[in-house]
Image 1: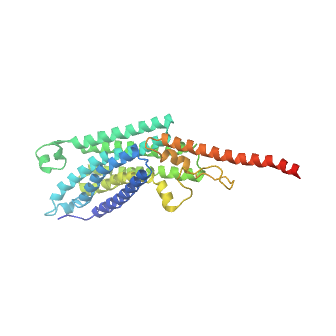
Image 2 (image 1 turned 90 degrees about the vertical axis):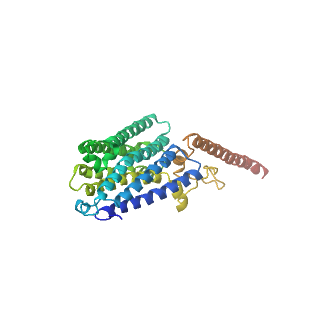
Image 3 (image 1 turned 120 degrees about the vertical axis):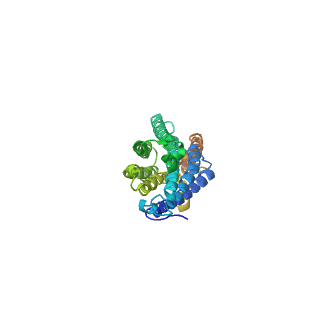
Length: 356
């Protein structure tokens, strides 16, 4: 038997919506990367993130049926007292796996930017500093949450609390939440804005640059979830309607992870969308990009040079350089043959005039 009232349906709806979006885009990401033989470190990190993300999703779903989001007066009714303890347990699971899940998600997005940056050391080392910041802060938060009570089960077991088990002041946990959220917001914005200078000198037309930067900058939406969650963090110290107040913390904390997975996957799907929607050009690098048989210059697709290093081999640069070199060689051969034809035809005209 479960209790499913008040804000609990909102929590369940959020989890179901985001897990569907995250799972679908991850499956599309795997297909796109495997078929293009471009699996990289960022893809492995996102694959690792899907395991704690699954545990986080299950914890939030079960929490919505076991007291989280329910008003205190309902939990005090006969037969509902057990949901207070079960709600605290599932909220504890949410707290731990929120911190564990967000690390590989953000690392995946960070390594993608490192891969795009290639040899630009300023951007690479800046991203490494950003990754170190949020990794360290979320690890500290996870360890504090786990060991804030001794034994650990006292965090949700009211019987142990009655026996005098020591737990840290809830205000300290709220401060940890504020600090972790502040670091996550800062690193989200820094990561989201970094594609702008990265793409500034890439050979793309203006519309292409704007679309690529917009896709890579969608991480701002994850930081907006964190900003909204800050508003509800004060509910950690609310003892009057505790589980009801926790619901919005769970909703927006889960949204931060779910949107992060969705955005991280979406930013790798441009080649798949172009193929599905037939949006110009081709990805076949064996076709020349110079002058064709009709002597009319063939314009290279605006995304091709960007794809060579964004969607190339897993190591980042070698494959793209090979493709570019091969293409340039074939272009030179074609242009050389075309020039030879022009010279031959010009040389033949005087002979024709002498014959007359």
